[in-house]
Length: 254
Image (cartoon, rainbow, N blue to C red; front, side, top):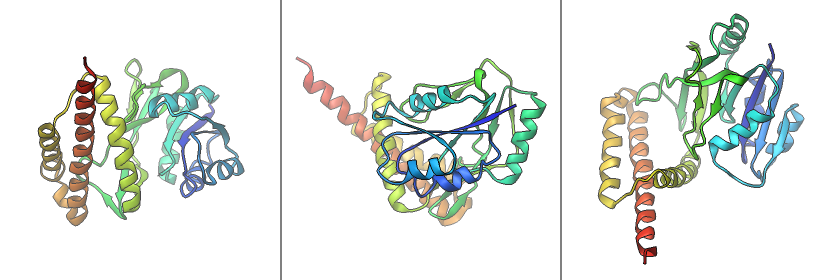
């Protein structure tokens, strides 16, 4: 059984080497890069990865399907450049492939926020399907927050968490906030949703309460409060941008 690792990138020079180092046990590494201006492509190729460069950006789901289509392994492990596979999870992945009990596996994920690993706020264990037989799954076409569709096959769970360095600093957080909120607003608008300032505020308040109170973010101390505030902020920006799209559509009507 051969394993292909697939990763989509743009300007991930600070991450891609460590990510690839953590999956040296794989048989193939496929990188689909959407116009990096740093050394991402050179670093990935030097590490032995096959790099496919694209000039457009169709969204996270379609871009990951491009990587999937280029993979040749019996099994697929999908990673983001800021994720790492620890040794314990490596052993579980290899054992799962050998046993072949399920066609797909959800992996737990432990994420960090500005140097703090978050174990509440809905961030952990954060099971997400990332390991699957190549013919058993395909990514959704969502612009953001894509997922692997494995509804027709048996899915198991692994135990050791992959490590996710999601927001190493405030600059990364602000960059992702802008990108994800814009894509989220566009996706919501395309799905027929409309926004207003009131809904943006209400969704932001709800997001804060859900993260900090109902999902017990307060147990992570200061970091939990930062996560809850950030969640509210990103939610507000998504629905604020949805409001702007809604208002723009009204002005265009005859």
